[in-house]
Length: 307
Image 1 (cartoon, helix red, strand yellow):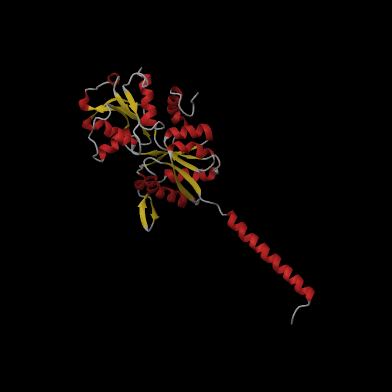
Image 2 (spheres, rainbow, N blue to C red):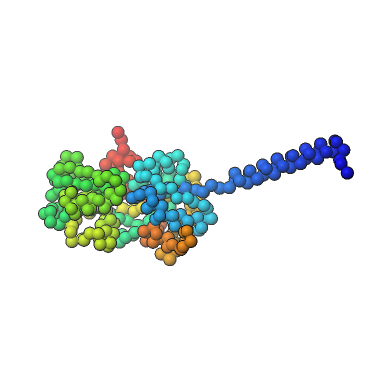
């Protein structure tokens, strides 16, 4: 039996209100879903290599913490500015970038990465070809030297500081110095010495160790003119906007990660640490980075540069 006109009107109004309320609830639920949090990953050689290495680690952290993370490869020279805009919840960078973002954006320390003989630390060296006749640091005056990228802690900062503290001004006392272009800069400068393009190179000890282990070079080909002190290696940091409880979960997940830890990627199980070329993670103190701060201050480099 049809409803009277007034009842039909109120029925239709009630139905319309229910539809509107239901739609708003659905939209609210959709909007309240947490978007994936970005982990900014410093690009070492290429964007593709960085994603391939660290995607299993990002997946592992998502599974362990219950928070969805996504990987964002970032060029070294763009990292600090993009961090300041709030783009990243977590960061994976070299130790100098950690110091800069700690100073300029209140980045907090989560864990230090371990790789190679010195674990969570590494150093730099000034190397020459053994046949060059160079045997001491003083011998490099007037020679051609290759540095790594300017924001590389053990490919530029530490060696440049060592030269200055040893009374050698790279701007005045060298024949020339350069930074190789393109990717794989650390390998290029080591090969550059090996094949005579440069007389001396500022080589990270870790790169020398890995290239020797992989058979790319022989330790007998080089002489180490000087070595720097050891400083922290790559570092995981957290944005001040990330909830402390989530930071604690991330730290715990990293510290408990072993070589046996795996995740599923595209239908296969991958070992997280092996994929990332990492031996593990270690808890460090912010004061462990003070030697980097001291070098940056001496050399008028970020984050302490004065124009």
